[in-house]
Image 1: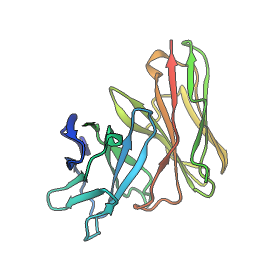
Image 2: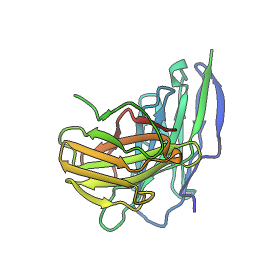
Image 3: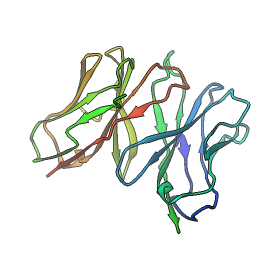
Image 4: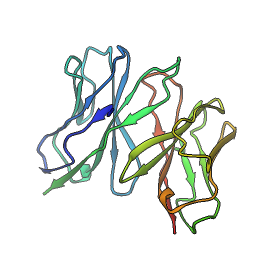
Length: 117
Length: 115
């Protein structure tokens, strides 16, 4: 079963506008971690933001914020004031505890964002 | 500080050849991960190590794939023999610890093409 679902394969956004990237997840654990990564066309994976399942506040990192709705199992990424350099693929990922270990990151299929002037 | 270092950045080889991908994690990081990215399957974890010990290799596709971590600063992923379906981008990542909030930092990846 798909653990991370990103329903938007691609989207266009105008420069300086805000954009919301959807992510829903599936877990039966109470404790888990949620991440967003950015992959520009150059290919590297860049960490953006983290949200823990017990964090009561939504995570923020500069222009990135995570809209965490635990009951809906939703962890949407909001990018405010989009810039041309934000054009990239964005991945949502989750980490669950397994056998006293937190190793494995499971990724969604990604959302391609294109920022237009 | 240097990030995760991978080599080579690009590899083109012929079917049946042995391929070795290399990774140097961030100094002090106890966890090392190997991922593969393809259009069809997205990003998938192949194997990860904690303190040089393999913890979970359930993602390794088959016996043709093997990974080692002889010391804290070096890991290899070997494919022998390689097949065209192994063509992908292989990422190495490392993290300081294994807690939920520990960020995994990715290397630039190795683009592998098997002809």
